[in-house]
Image (cartoon, rainbow over all chains, first blue to last red):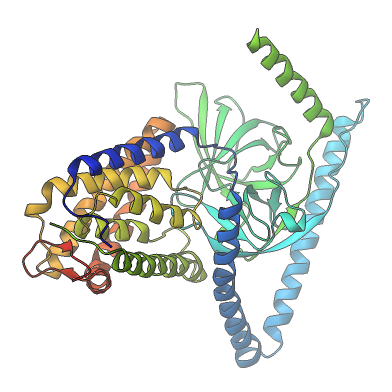
Length: 295
Length: 181
């Protein structure tokens, strides 16, 4: 059977224009915050991801064997375990310091912020996004493990990102290195707010910080809790560069992320439902806006 | 006259799909193992450029859509942006077909690089319309240059393989798919 008997420029043109219009429509309708996947796409991700995972698994096995048995026998293993514990303790000490400061500030307030509750799910990194435009990682946990879209992802070092695309057993995490990821951050020392965005060369940029704010090199940036995606107090990064012009109202601040993305292997997904009170307020506000718009 | 048998078309599509999946797994899982997380090789562009250069079919746009859809399983970029850029590139190639030749590896590398630049401009234009920020485009360009060079360098080998898969008759310079003979 022949599907094309002769050159048909008119048919080609019609198909080209139709597909281009569909593509343009899809580009314009694309959701920036997250990506809803169809059952077929979920199925295909489920099929492809295990292959990607097996490659990482093989590499891990080979390198672990070489490290543990050929080079150092047990020392390498012990070292990794001790470093992991050290990171945990450092993270705890850092968290206690933050809590102490927070307690002092909020003691006078009637209602304290509720602590972050919910499960923590450990996940392994399976692959990175196929396009270098996107700083997205794929992890081996999905909706079957209780993950939801927009769930925050962290390590013991700090903030990684949030769940952008969800499948049954795998999900894609939009990291803080990606320009599409915007985190409401606060400078720990001066309590200055700003929006942290992905930037070039594995750095982040803290935007909208007033030029007069006393930021210094080495300042630590944390999540502020605004936006209701990330819990408050997670370390984002350290200020590594500051540019203040003699004019303008903001300053250019670069952050080195707390998480070393090049060596990232495992992450923790927080099954955090966000601040329900805030969410209720926002839903109500949205309702008011919508009903106002309808009128 | 271009005659395409469904059987040959299906074989070509299936093998090319498997090749794209293989390349994407290579790019997404193996390169990051060696801490090459900044760069990712856009094999989808290579495959689509091959189709644009060598496949004469009115359904080319649908094939581009198909391969971009497969690519979207590996990237949150999705299928739409690349599909639009791919069709624009394919239309330009269609107009310039008579002056494009792949008689040597150097020409293949050169032509592939040129059309990757065209692809980059189309995608950048769309991104600029969405983001309204040149910084992102410049940053993208710094990654595009090395990535596209690698893609261009491997293009002769990949094209030679795909020529066999699609049974391309390249001797008369027509560079078109004439499967089913």
